[in-house]
Amino acid sequence: MRSVRRVEFVENRVVDGEAPPQGDAPSPPKLSGALETLLDHRPAFRGSVRGYDRLEVDNYVAWAEGELAAAHREREHLLDRLVAGAAELEISRRLLAERPPARPVVSDRVGEILRLAEDQAAEVLAAAESEAGRILADARLEADARLRKAHEIRELAADVADQLRADAQRDRAAAAAMLAQAGGGAELLLREAAEERERLAAEAVRERDRLAAEVADLHRQREQARAALRELTDRLGEALRAVGVSDADELVLAGGPGEPVSA
Picture 1 (cartoon, rainbow, N blue to C red):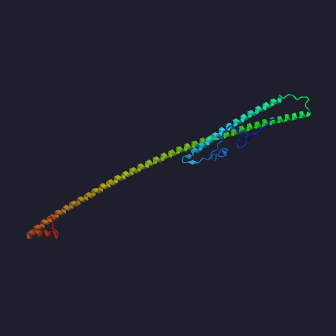
Picture 2: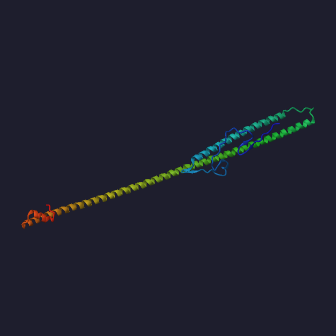
């Protein structure tokens, strides 16, 4: 009598002493929207200057695709095992059907034992068929669930990528508007600075002309004072000569004490 192996699913893993033909399953990224809870919660990605963290989104999509591939491999493995089990069942049926008839000399006790063995074998075969059907149904359900989750993750990743692109376009438009506004402000400042420079230059020219006029007037007044002084000196000299005063005395008298007058 053949023993029947029982296959159970524990946390999306096959437990029957034989691992499926796949490598170590990668651990999911440390996100709040892990695959196990995706149907209830959306993954939350860290924000960045221009939206979500692109590297975190790419890692999540890569992990989801790996989970999808693992689900495909696990389903194929279970299907292979189911086919092998069905073949073994068919072989067992044929062996039982081709068993030679019991010898008439066999005692009733031996015949009863054989009948019990046949009944037990039939029960084992029925249990094996039921277990195989259950395994196949569970595998299909598990694979379908993983496929749905993977498709949802892909759609979510596409939505996140679209949002990132929209955020980037909005940021570029805002930056262009700020640049245009800054350019207009700079042009206004340059124009005002040029006007102020022209005004100051005009004031400087006016002030220079005023100072030049004052200097010219001072020169004119000085020349007039010199001319008046020479005329006064000449008249004084003539008056002194008229009364008989010498030239040296005339100079001393005209210039004051200790200050001779120059012509």
